[in-house]
Image 1 (spheres, helix red, strand yellow):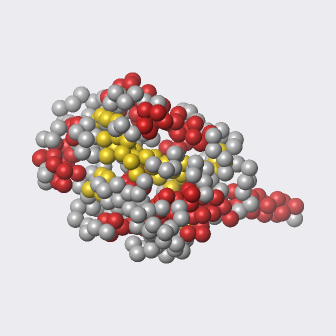
Image 2 (image 1 turned 30 degrees about the horizontal axis):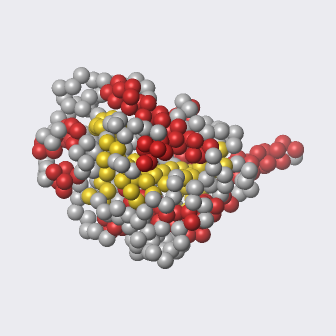
Image 3 (image 1 turned 180 degrees about the vertical axis):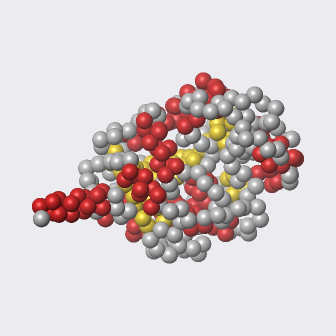
Length: 368
C-alpha cells in the first residue's frame, strides 16, 4: 500500500512538472519565466547550447523557460515533452494554447486572447524563432511566391505579436506592452518578419525575383554572394558540402539601437548567417530599421520606437556553428570547405557575442 502511494505521488509530480498547461499549474511565481515560441526539440536544444556556453547568460536557478505553442500547429510537441522528460530538464516547461484562429480574427480579441494575457503577465520576455513563409493573406496580399507549410503556426505567432505590440491594422487595440513597456520581445529571421506583419507591415515574397529580376537559380547566383540571402547553388549542382545559408555582411543605419544600446561601432560590418528568400517591405507600426544588407535593399534589423526592449534581426545569431569550428562547408562548388566560425572571423564572432550579452543583460534586469 505504501509503495503504491509513493508511486501515485511520483506520477502526479511528473505529470504536473511536465504538463503542457504550465501556467495553469501551481507554478513558482517567484521565478522569472522566458517564453519560447515554437518550442521544437531543435529550438530547445538551441537555447540549451546558448545557456551552456554562457552566450544567453541567465541565472539558471531563478530563470525558467516556457515553450508556448498553438495546438493546431503541424509539429508534434509531444516530441518536445518527451525530450524534456528524458533529459530531466528542470528549467523547461510547456504551455499549449487552444482556440479558433484564422486570417480574419488575428488583429483583434479572439479565442486565445485571455491565454496570451496569462502568458504575458507571468513572463519577462519572449523569443520568436525562424521558420517557413507566412501566408500572404495575413498581410492582405495574394500568394504569388510564398511556400506556406504551417499556416496555423503563423496565425498564432502573428496574433501573439499583435497582442503584445499593437498594430496599424487595429488602432483601437490596447497593446499588452502598454502595461509592461520594458518587457522583451525579440526574434530571428521569420521572427522579425512576423513582428513586422503583426504590427501592420508587409513582406517581399521573393528577394531575387522582386528586387533583382532574377527568375532562376542560375540568374540569382550571378548577383554575387553579397546580394544572396541563402545559397542558390544547391539548386544548380549536387554537392553534399554546400551550405544552405549564406554568410554575408550587414551595415548599420543611423538608428541608435546597435551603436548605443548594443554598443557596436557604426563602422563595423559584421558577417552574419542568412537563410531566407523573403524580407520586410512596408514597415509596421512603430518599427524602425536598424540594419541593412550591403546594397541597402534588404532590411536586416528592426527596433520599436516606443518599447525599448522590442527588437529583431533578419539573420540567425542563435546558430551554434558560428561560435565553434563544428563542421566544414562551402558556398560555391569551387570553394575550399571551411567552418562558419572561420568564415565570419573573430570580429564578427565578437559582434554576435556582444549581441547575446545585450539580450542577457536585459533579461537579467527584468522582473515579472
